[in-house]
Image 1 (cartoon, rainbow, N blue to C red):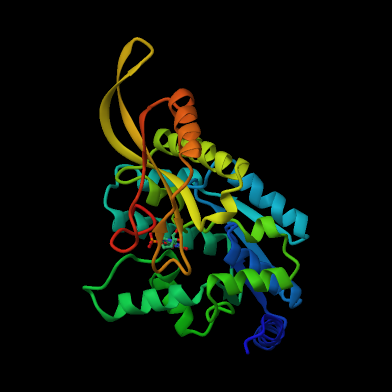
Image 2: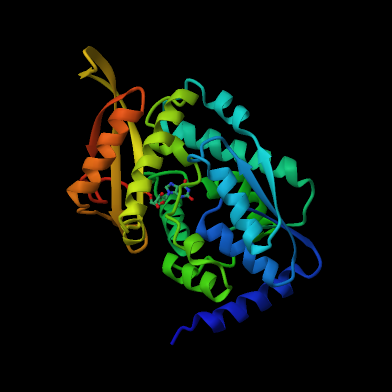
Length: 316
Ligand code: XMP
């Protein structure tokens, strides 16, 4: 039977052989995959630089949280704040694939600019990413989304044998098991997955600071209530997405004409399929109440009851 401890030893050995004393760089996002990757490289004694590119599409206080978490684990990271650049490049862009392309390419540019000439790149690619990207490549018709970590420049590097993907055989739960055996705290391992393009895929159409602020506030309120009531760890992913459609309402004594926010909570095994979660109405009620009272620009709260397929987990 498959034992994660054996796998860990095998992978660490593999990393040592491949890396030697070359410098290896990896991007960290605060997510489970890149965190396990960085700790694994650290554990293998590799000469590693872990770089956190803040693309300005993170959730509320997320950058701080990521830095604190790595500090707790004793793994040094470098932060590059590129948020202004990302928002400038994204301004006015409405097309989902175009947005992903801009973010993916800029991310790699910013990342490599900060890296200089490191000899190896490590990526936290998982098995589902590998198969989803493979099916994208095989057929134009089945092209679903361009995954952020699979854009052309990475493929080029891969062809040169400069990319390490030590998690590429694993599913998410196996990555968590590996993280546990590496001594990573459970609250870090139990963080919900967060997409590479960040809040961009939860803000259909154009992106700007105002929209991002709304999403951040609503998301923080929702996640806060889920944690408070013990539901955070029961779901695979939960978040707020902006529905940039104005509808009429009443706020105070005045007519309001504002956007809606959609809450989504799903369970999933591996993100290939997902089901929406029957959250207690009381949580939805509290979340909706707080959002409608505290967040300017929103006068309607929706709960997303779509399975994947046919919907996807994210909005874009
Ligand atoms: P979808 O929306 O395709 O999402 O059902 C499936 C899972 O993948 C995450 N996701 C991404 N992760 N880069 C990532 O690293 C991406 O570009 C990306 N897009 C979606 C999503 O959050 C969900 O867990």
